[in-house]
Each structure stands twice: as C-alpha cells, then as structure tokens.
Image 1 (cartoon, rainbow over the protein chains, first blue to last red):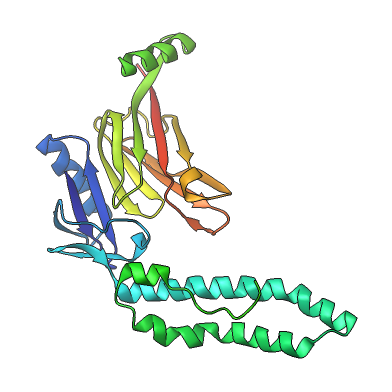
Image 2 (tube, each protein chain N blue to C red):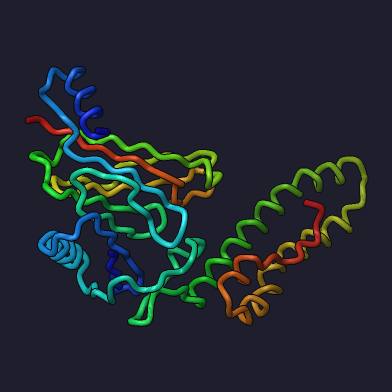
Length: 146
Length: 119
C-alpha cells in the first residue's frame, strides 16, 4: 500500500508502507504531516505516472498523480538551455581556431547565434506540447555540428 | 535465513555487541520505489527524485546509530554520483543521491541501507 501526500508548495510525496499495521501507518503518516506544515493526504494507491522522468514535476488530486505540464515545460526549457550552453562552450575553441587561422568566422558566428536563439525559438513549440512523453522526446533543431 | 546469516556474520565481527537494527533493499525503476526486502522498516517516503526517507518500525536507541548506505547508479548513467544521509534521527534516515555530472539529485537504480545498534 502507498499513500500520496501533497505539500503546501504543490509538490508530491509518496509513502510506501512495508507494514500492514494500522498503528504504524498512522504513526508514519502523522509524522510526515507534522514535519511538512500544510501537507495533506491526497489518497491511497492512486494511479502514478509510469516512470520518473518528471518526478519533481508531479502533482496530485483525488484522481491520481500526474505530471504538471506547466512545471515540466519549464524544466525541459531549462534542460535545453543547459544543452545549448554546452554546445556554445564547445564551439568556443572552434571560433578561436578560425580566428587564428583566418577561417570562416562569419558562418561560425551565424551558427552560434542560432544556438543562442534556440530557447526563444522552441519556447512556443514546447508550450503546445500537452503530453509528458512527447515533451521528454522533444529535441530542438540545434543547427550546429555538435 | 538471510537475516540470520547477516546477523551472525556481524555478530562474529563485532563480538555480539552490535547487530543490524534494520535494513532494506530498494529498487527504483517505475513510478515509485519498491521495497525488495527489509527488516524493521515501516515505510519508505519518496520525497522527490533522489530524496528518500526510510522510517524504522522501531526507532534505534540513538539518533547517531551508524547507518550504511550503498547505491547502484549504473542504470541511470550517473557517472559521478555519491549518496549521503541527508538527515538522521532515531526513527528514520533521509537519503540523498547526488549526480555531480548533472549537479542534481537523481534516482539510483537500487540502494541498500542498514542501521546498526547495540544490544
């Protein structure tokens, strides 16, 4: 048996019981509620997302636990920014080399600008995604060689 | 049989003055963690990704009782990971699993926790 809690900030905790003793279940439940002001019990054995890709973006109501798509979109955009930054860092050396050797810096600069623009470009696309799996699978067109 | 073996081995090494007060093996593959096997555990709380509290059925006699925590990160590709006890009281231990590479908490594929106590 497991019990789902919703904290005051909207985040979700799930307590999995290794006992059927009602006294221990009550004790652990009360301890959790005492340690998390404003938390409430949402229900027992509620349906859960099938994986934990968006674990920190879960929310819950009496129907079950599901992914808060607004939070998940923010998270995916953060992941894309992190990936974009890594690709920009990787292209730094390429730019330096092109400058030293008289290579084509204009094409490289254009690629780097395209990378910088990725979050703005994909933001509206991400806003239209309504399914957690589709959001997890979404990849921008990076437009670089990395 | 398994519990007796562990207790017996520990007893030999520690002169029968300490034993595992409680232990658990936990797998995290699907929506919520699964307790594969345990002793003296009443519940496991999935607080967030990489943040799990183990609550003992009977509290240890000391809030400073030694706790051992091991994790298996292979299935999650956490290349530089470590685990730590985030908070410990006599009745529970809160475990955090950190992935250096991603600079974030992550779910290990499996973890093992054991608490020692004197008797």
